[in-house]
Amino acid sequence: MSTVREMLVELTGTPEFADSIGDDADLSASGIDSGDLVRLVLLIEQRTGVEVTAEDMEQLTTIADYERFVAGRGGAGGA
Image (cartoon, rainbow, N blue to C red):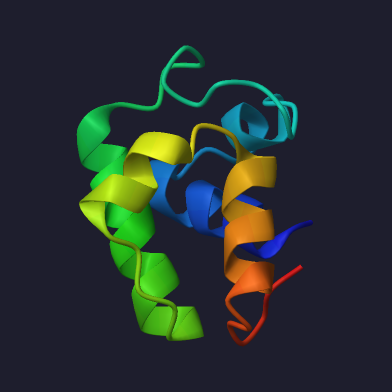
């Protein structure tokens, strides 16, 4: 399971829900609300050391986007 997916499972408390979202599915369209996305970004920053700006968040819509972003910034635990 990917690092970002694991964080989604932790945030939502429902592994079935996080596992059912494809890597390229739009998270907002999949039922992840803006509050969960903010909490996801906070977890990413805390656990990987990668800063995610509001501008970055506008471009990050899928699990794959977040994974590539973290890996591209050299974050610990990146995909």
